[in-house]
Structures are given as structure tokens and as C-alpha cells.
Image (tube, rainbow, N blue to C red; front, top):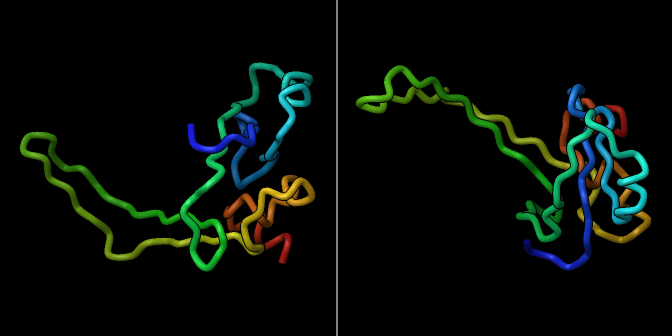
Length: 110
């Protein structure tokens, strides 16, 4: 995996709206909270950025046939970005405004 910083994303498996998402650099801290209700993923330490901030882009499509493959795309898309420039500085790892692009999270932090 890209990166050598050993950064991890910890998410509750049952929540939505960005609730409970954490970025951790300590495997000991992650394992102390280990249970079957969390998902742990390696964090991409060098993500694609827009104006120095993390973002995600969502598009919607409808599959009406697999053979032949027929897709219908909705004309709009949703782009969400973090409210703070991206950083892996230790002080910023716990700042959701840097790492979580979820609208609910960003709205609370604005």
C-alpha cells in the first residue's frame, strides 16, 4: 500500500452520516477498541486532492440490463470536500474537518 506512515481509518459498521469515523496512527489504540462492530481500513496517505483538500464525487446510475449492458446516468453529481486543507500532521489526525467529507460532519464543523 502507498505510504509508510501506518495511518488507519476506523469506522463503526452500523452508523451513517460520518458518525464515529476516526483516523488513527496507533495500532495499539485501534486494537484496544477492537470488536466486531468496527471496520478498520488502511488510509490512503497520498489521496487525490482538489485545492489541497480531500473530496469525493458521487454519481448515480441505473442498470436496466446486464446483457447487453445498459446504463442510465443521472445528469447531476455531488462533489463534497473537506473544510480544512489535507494534512497528516499528528495534531490534525483527530480533526474530522480534514479527513471526513461527509456533509453532516462538515456542516457541524463550519
